[in-house]
Length: 541
Image 1 (cartoon, helix red, strand yellow):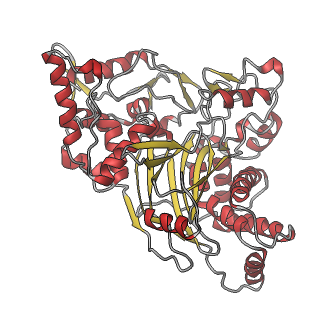
Image 2 (image 1 turned 180 degrees about the vertical axis):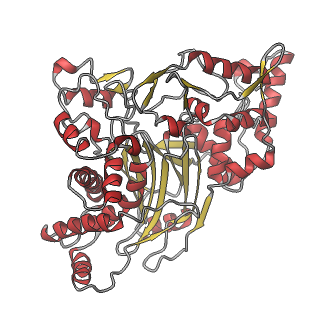
Image 3 (image 1 turned 180 degrees about the horizontal axis):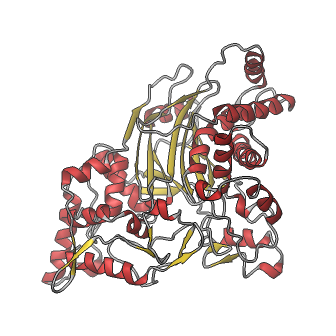
């Protein structure tokens, strides 16, 4: 990408971005439909955060203006890029995580060899979260990515709490009774999760007692259900999603003596988060998805080619079945207002999410809660009643469940927030991971139409080949995905100037060209999976 093109990007942003000014919350309008550049695709924006979070500043006449980030020359405005390759690598690798899983977890041989993860923020602070853990009282491992909006509070709470709800639902009645007995008699409680926390992971410590109290109520109810073996994995995932969302809503409504916890509960409820969670147990892979994150399998076919197998569907207006579902849940008179501009009530991109009680509670309930002594400006909550808010709730968290029996050809699983999928297709992501895994850069066959080419076209083909021959910069495959998603040109080659440009944009511009990106790649033990099929006389397709 040339400096001229980069200057053009800035001018386009400057001329075309329009912000609607509400008291403390900004909403974005789409960029021009024609707005595009190589690998810098038009971002489908969700609710933007407040001016303080986006880096927008308020001028004396109350108009939000962008900071100057360019200098003038006699002919054009030129960007000042000062990031060296070393600085770029430092930024890209700041949130890396790589964990090798022991072959034997104390109960069974582990189907997961390792996982690698990374994040690159666009918002400040980052609104994405990620989690990974081994289930200690049951079997299997849990992996999740969480994409927050209207702040990070909801994504943070869900990333900390959801795995506990899932694991408790999976536990047998006997184990739950043992935990309850220990709590009742103030004895030590055996841990139920082994977390794999990144070094710079965030943890909410203040509301821990509140979270535990509601989790305890949950397992007490499960004990009363008298289910000796616990729930199935699919039921546990679905029930945990819905129960946690219900608790988030309840915590914002009940009076709490501690002001910090009270404020935090209201922030979590009025923010929102999508979630995509995978549970891996032997050859059983269950995925629960609510929102527009994705889970994609990388499959090595018998002919040596790689393919992608989607395990989720995006829950947004670009999914016809999801759009039809949302419209069917409201009166016919609202058919044209429930989703407008590809957004729920014209505001929210995902059509399923945790939190977001402003799309779930009645107007009366919202008003009564927000007028009960909260300092909304300090909490960065702007209560904006959407137009045509006639038959709530308009949003739910009910996850879409997918079951897949792992086969030897299933080599890895990619979990990522929509920031990655805005930049890469499923097939592109699988190809990048496969090349990183094998060290073999796959060459696309030359199409019949390309076999007779002119000299200039031949140069383009040679550039493509050269790009495919360049080895990966990154030991961590999640970093490799992020680098390629924002830094490659039309030939698939990392363009240093473009990468620097995308990472040098100030906070108030970055969000217009990309979202927070979170990626976790899970590698499977193909030998163990193959042995399981052979031992049980199973056939894999």
